[in-house]
Length: 148
Image 1 (cartoon, one colour):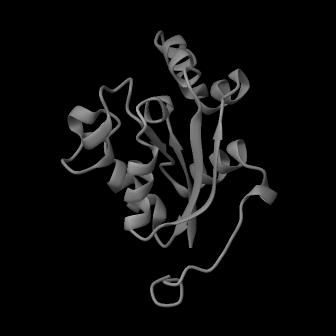
Image 2 (cartoon, one colour; image 1 turned 60 degrees about the vertical axis):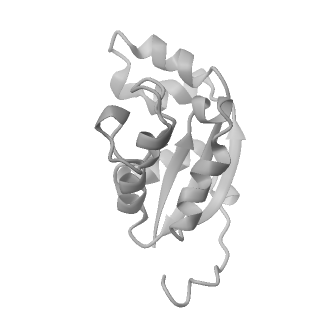
Image 3 (cartoon, rainbow, N blue to C red; image 1 turned 180 degrees about the horizontal axis):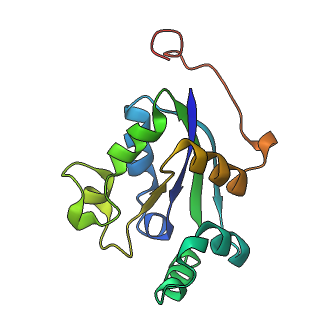
């Protein structure tokens, strides 16, 4: 069982798309083990996007990520990282597959509605950034015994 981080970005919140996007993960059978709405601090943004800090567009990212709250989710299941990456697809919605979350909801590469961890290592780092260990819950889904 893997766990990954998903962030529903400010444009998801501002456009009232939270439920529609969460339903994609639930319909796939993924297990949401924690979820919270939060305003991102400059410290978290700087840490989360440190690999982009020297790029000329970094101030635009900071402005975007503080324009409204985000919804942070810890999601768990077998092969969840790969599954979530397929459901979200390319960062640039112009390159996303039809039917993917970014194809259906993202407006531009700058307003791309969602972040998903790209590996187990990244997921572990990102989950610790957004959640305290005691915040993440666990429960048994009815399908855990038959699928998971």
